[in-house]
Image: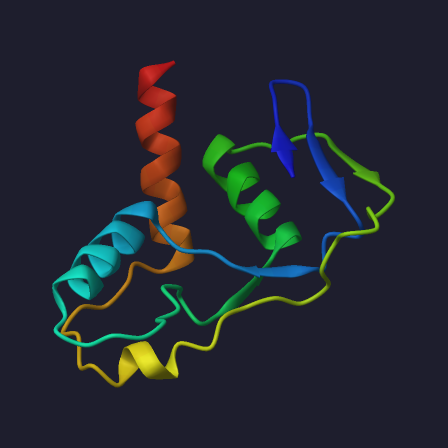
Amino acid sequence: MQSNKKSFKIYGDGNQTRDMMYVYDCIKKTIYCARLKKSGVYNIASGYPSSVNKVYKLFCDFEKKNIDVKYYPTTKDELGIFYCDIKKFEGINLDYKCEALEKGLEKTYQYYFNKL
C-alpha cells in the first residue's frame, strides 16, 4: 500500500490483513524486552489483524473525504492473512496497553500532516 496526493495503491483486494501497531508502542516494547533478564524470541506486535482496506478507510476519515484508490493485482509474495502470536510476550506481564490502531494511526497522520 502506498499513499500519495493522488490516490492509494492497494495490491490485492484490500482484504488481506496485517498486524499493525503504533511505532511508539513497538519502541516501548522493544526497550522492555532488551531489559529482560530472559532469553528467547518475542513477537512485538498488537496480536490483532487489520485489513488494508480498514487502514485506507481510516485515512479517508482523517482527510474527511474519499481518497481515490486503485487496486492492482496481488504480487506473488503477498500474504493473505498475517498477524503475530503474542502469547509469549503477554506472559511476561508487561503493564502496558498498546494504542488502538485507529488512535495510533491518527497520531501518526497528525504528526506528518503538521510537518508537511
